[in-house]
Image (cartoon, rainbow, N blue to C red; front, side, top):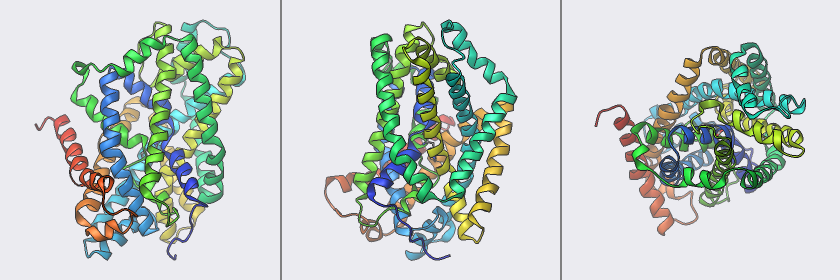
Amino acid sequence: MAENSVTWKSRWIFVLAATGSAVGLGNIWKFPYITGEYGGGAFVLVYLACILAIGIPVMVAEVLLGRSGRSDPIHSVLKAAKRSGHAQAWSIIGAAGVISGLMIMMFYSVVAGWVIDYFFQSVTGSYAGLEADTISGGFGELYGDHDRQFLWHCLFCLLTAGIVASGVQKGIGNAVEVLMPLLFVMMLIMLGYSIAEGDFKAALHFMFTPDFSKLTGDAVLEAMGHSFFTLSLGMGAIMAYGAYMPGNASIGKTVLTVALFDTLLALIAGLVIFPLVFANNMEPAQSVGLIFKTLPITFSQMPYGMLFASIFFALVAIAALSSSISLLEPGVAWLERNGLERGAATWLLTGVAWAGGILCLNISEIFNFLDNLTTKYSLPIGGLLIAVFVGWVLPATQVSENFEVRRGPLYTSWLWCVRIVAPAGIVLVIINQLGWI
Ligand code: TRP
């Protein structure tokens, strides 16, 4: 197949698609629960520092590789390596990414399934007017009910595959244009409610007063890993999307916009959830069930709560969908380039992720294993390779030709970050956790 000539309609559509990929369960489900688990403020601070010093620079590197290669991640990296006379082995970045994407999809679709379940519970008003304890206990029932989870898991896989199979342009581009702003507005409404009804002061204190004695090596690793997870980095998703980015758009500005939206949404999600946690005398460390135990309590007490709840869970499911498509896209684009029909490629990869998802929903150890393996190791290591490849392996001119500003403080700080800060940070955090230092 020829070089990819499709581009998004405009820079803005790239921003929305990348934001659609970035903003998902990572922001609304995962960020609050890991913040709860790792003790709040200090964890949030490390996470923000990682976004700034590692996530954003690596994202710039990914977009740059994608846009200059204009192909699937494996071929984009291959092309850049060949052009500068380097070993083709670097395309391992893309290949490992395809596998990471599938592993993430396996547990992601299970969680998305829970969201769909809560959507239907809200539509039917099944928890309206119940006691807070009963509502939060409802998650345990779902968690123990494998058939119910299986049903939603299948549905979510089908929806993802349906969009990916029908092509990126129509499906993704148009959907995110409407839905992302809507999600943002919904979160703001919820925030207003939490400020009014929840214990907002306690939440602010929990999230923004760092207590470094709570910061373990594992917490730092999780915070760093999550900065990759939440920005969809380290496995080629953003690279694949970057391949469709218009040539004249500024990479730096675009990436900053996406990262800003993503971070804002995560912080707002935390500020919606923790006031409710504290107002209801719950513990912040509620593991994977946190949002499902807290949010429905608020909805059940709000005027028109079930209506808001239905809209809210529908939007979260859609945010999950606009993320999950980007988990499959790199692999599908690669298979397509190798001659497989897009539909067949999509169903094949979805089938693998679906089967893995069944294991995840039956065996929680597998769920945790895949979550830890990808977030803490494969994404950061993927990011490390990308940073080293762009920062050290490619010739400076091949890198700088992608920017309109080739000098100046922003460019220089980016270069420092991809060359030194990101690689050193990733390596240090990982070997510290492995107990080697
Ligand atoms: N960023 C998404 C979220 O926060 C998840 C996701 C989508 C992802 N594509 C990815 C994570 C690629 C890592 C790599 O929900």
